[in-house]
Structures are given as C-alpha cells and as structure tokens.
Length: 344
Image (cartoon, rainbow, N blue to C red; front, top):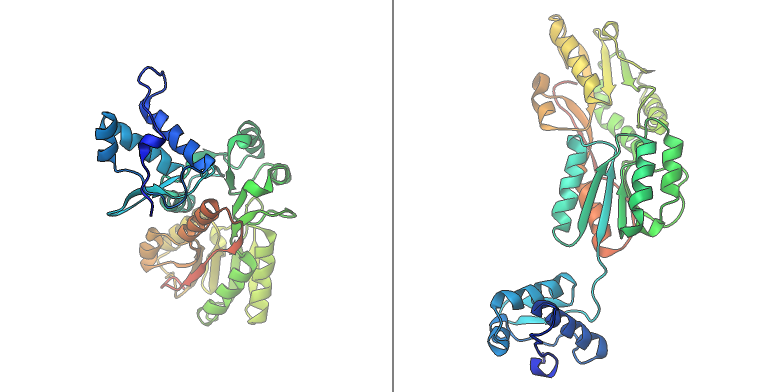
C-alpha cells in the first residue's frame, strides 16, 4: 500500500474564499481523476496533515469525512485512510411514499432507515390513500431522487394511482407490500404473496378450523387488499373441505357459536373482541374462532392470544434498503408466518 506525499498534490491557499477543508477535498478528487492517486494508496493521518499544513485537526477530519461519505476514502484500524474508489459514489437520495403511518408501515420504515444508516438521504411523505395527493407529490419531487419507494394503496382512485406509478422511471422504483397490476419494466418490489400466503395459512390452521361450522372472511368493499386474496381463500377452503363464507361487513348477529372469522383490519378485530367480551356465553377459541391479519404485541395478550397471519414488516424494510444500497432491483416475496394462539 503506497503512502502518498501530500505536498505533491496539495497547497493551502489561505487567500482563497474556498474553505481549506474543501480545498483538500478538491485536491484528492483531482488526483484520483487524473491518475495521480490510485486505489489502495494510503493518505497521511489527520494528525500528520494537521501539523504539516498548520491547520486544525477538525478541518482535516471534515475533509476526510466528506471524502469518506463520497466513497472515495475508507479507513482501516491501524492503517489510517486509503483510496477506496476513484470516482465519487452516486448520491443516494430516496423518496419514500406511504399511504399511511400505522405500526406495520412504521416497522417497514424503521427497518429501512436502520439498514441504510447515513448512506442515503431519506425524504418521507404520507399521501393518505389519495391518488390525487400521490400524483401531486411525485410531480413536484421525483426528478431529484435516485430511488422512489412506494406502498401503493389508493382508496379514492386506484387506477389513477397505478397510472402515476407506471410513469415513474423504473430504474428508480421500488414497490412495497403489494404488486401493482400490469406494471411493466425492470423495477424492484418486495410484496406480500396474498394468494400463496392465504393458502398456506388455511393449510396450517385447518386442524383448528375444522371444529367450526363455517369460516368467514370479512372482506370490505373498500379495501386495499387485492381480490386475489378473496378468491384464494375460497379455493383454499374448498381444497380442505371447509365450509366458508365471504362478507363485506361484520355484524353482531354473525358472531355466534360455531363460526370462525378471518379479519383483515384491526377495527374489525376490535369489533369482534368487544362482541365476544360482551356476550358472557361465548369464549374465543371454543365457541368462536378468530384469525387476524398482521401480528403485533397487543394481539399476543388479547383474549389470551389472537391467532395471526402476518408478513415480516422488518424484513420488507431491509430488503428495500438492500436494493437501494446495491443498486440491484429484485422481485422479492416477503417472508410470511402463521402464529396459532388460543383464539382458534
């Protein structure tokens, strides 16, 4: 590893309006671009340069940190700083657009941020399920970003929202949570495989479901879950000879002995739990079965444990971060689990 003699490349101009730390940054960038410095070349330590040029340690440290953030410099314990690459790494600036900030989306976001750390600038916005709001955000902002990560749940005008996504540069795009119908091109996605997941869930839960006369899927008319989930549920029950029913709404008179329910929203779950609690003759897991989409800590304790069908939200965030950091777009089916508890 060759050690660079900095006097060959850098002279402090104290009369310049350009700060000394920036002069040093520009000198190193010039040397790497023109071949005066090569990968692996070792630079003087912060203390050495501070003494040599009679400038503060903090000035040299700021220069080196800037160059390290660009990917030009790297450091190794006991080996000071060395040239890691000859051109600055492309700036990573990520636009993150979520439909809402619930605890599940927050888990995705937190995992993405944790994985990326300080390697990218994150600009986060919520479009509140509105295709019009989404279109306004991307119209103003998309050009300046290296990546755009979207959870595509539109309740007002899904087709308009999907058309807006179709117009985004595919090399920047990462779709999270669900697939966008008809979206073409080379883009990244981390999606819930709803059809496969519900079939797996019914398979794993079938021994417990068989004690109920009917399995009810509550599938509202206005939902961001795809129709494929509803169709796969019917097919999965049919394959296991389970009687099933799909309803758009959950009412008190439906909650009776011998019925099991798969609910998609936490609002539906709370309605079901309150109904059972208020009816002292019914016990969850004995008279009425409950399966909830998406696990959380509250469901572990509620009614002595709610059975859940759940995506790994942290894994979704980490997968998206890996695509951003590596620049490699992939289509990834997010990990999925079935957690059997006493509510079934």
